[in-house]
Image (cartoon, rainbow, N blue to C red; front, top):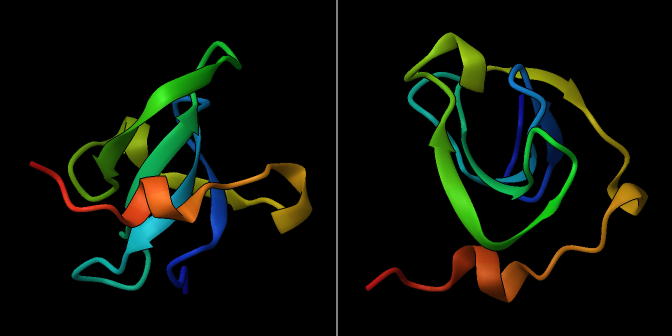
Length: 78
C-alpha cells in the first residue's frame, strides 16, 4: 500500500517518506521531513504509524512536492 520512498502526510500534519514497510500494509515506518508547523526538520524523525493515531497516514503526496535526500533517510542509525 505504501512502498518505501512514498511521500505521505500523517494525521498530526507531519510530512515524511516511507522508509520501511510495516507489519500491515497500512502501517509503514515513516521518516518525517516536515514537522506539524510546516518547518523542515534537520534530522528525520522515524514514526511507527501503527503506534498511535496521530501518526497514521492520511494521504499520499506527489513525489515532486518535496526533494528527498534518501541517503539521509536510509543511513544506519548509531
